[in-house]
Image (cartoon, rainbow, N blue to C red; front, top):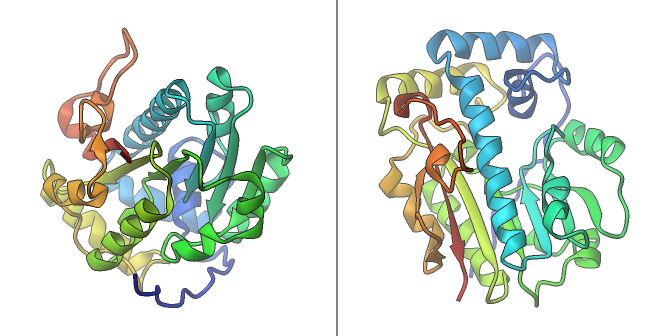
Length: 273
């Protein structure tokens, strides 16, 4: 498989909106700056449901991690983890598997420093800097290699991270490389915003993000459809119920589900045979 193009490291500039910090603001966090809040509020004028979508995305992540832990997965790699919040992956995994190992990966130095400060690193938890656009650098990172045995089943989490990549071929190559690297019995979890349900809203948001955010030179101008997300799983065996809107993926008993048109994000879990 060909190598991946060089990735310029993300710097820290509080005057420029940052995806992780905007997401943190929508979740009610405090690890954000004025530029992040301004961008977040501008997006809310277009799509006031964004905080709900963020919460539903986190719920999906937690349900998927519980499923993987119950299925015997004891190693997790969370790529594009974002700022720490309630119900982090290692906390959820250890509800079922106290011996679970988790490696958090993000390209934002602020996210990494916050994560290292707030998440107690030990022989089973680490926070490393890496970019989803360069999966080889993640897979070969010394700290990941210390904690994760890629010869054994692992859960790779790609939750709300792939939408920032504006090259569909690159996205396909990234997921193909990760599928190739993991052992049989491993799982890949993907969630992704889509354009099917509210194209007029997603088109406006995509333009806002491209023009105003730090992703100005690398932002996506069009979100994919649900049908365009499924190929990212390649030949993985899809876990029931397949690729669905995130609130519909194995909801907890009694869990209230929001109106369909308020959560235009899909998620799924695939298993490597």
